[in-house]
Image 1 (cartoon, one colour):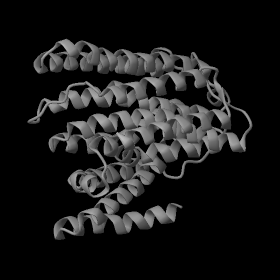
Image 2 (tube, one colour):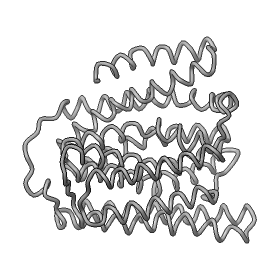
Image 3 (cartoon, one colour):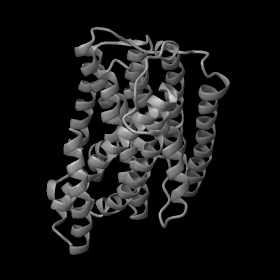
Image 4 (cartoon, one colour):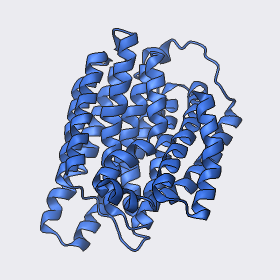
Length: 350
């Protein structure tokens, strides 16, 4: 598989450059850009996995979430620049749904087929549950409700205020988990770690991450310009492109990493990637995009559509109920996947 992704990178990056300069057919370039980003994401995933082994499961999970979301952030910044506000908000929705239902679902399902019962740190699960409830149900629903009686200026001011609070709380949550309470709620994998050799050295892993991120930035800028033509050709709305296409392509790195960790029975890392990535999207990436949008022609308020909000709230509640006991199995994974497919059909038909 690594050789396939390696070949895709060697072919995809030059083809992306050549195609953008020579104006090849848009639909063909859309496919090339998506496959190239997914292949580059696999290298980012391998690099972060090496760093995860070196740094430990908690920081490793945070690194996986961060560099997985780097792709999403880059695509969203270029989409904001192009004025595609709906696509950006939809992609944020898709990331929340994708991480909580698709990534966690596939991890629980495939890991559960190999191991009848898998466990992870229930204290972390409960801590993350509270943050998920805050990030989505409080910080996303409040702007929607209050904005009903506000004009655009006041709605944007409310969004900026909430965004700043969310970023501060997210940084405080990291400080709590990695500094003041590090080791207080140690999981089994942290109490009795087994020796595992990283694929790459720390220096090489960091170098691969930097080069891959730069390549993703170039390809993402070109990918954004294909959305309009692709939507018209396939009959896809901006909502569907954002929720499904951009979210899956943008989060391919942590998709692969979380599933791989679950197959190795490293559920602490797998859950940290899926849930940690959701928290980072909701509490850091989304607020950061709101603040960055102030620099562009069209600012982005933190106001989602009703279908987006209902889907995210439902995904959070389902994920919290399933993960709070600190153990999982293949059937719980299948339940999450079923929920994702139902929502995907809904967004396609909207």
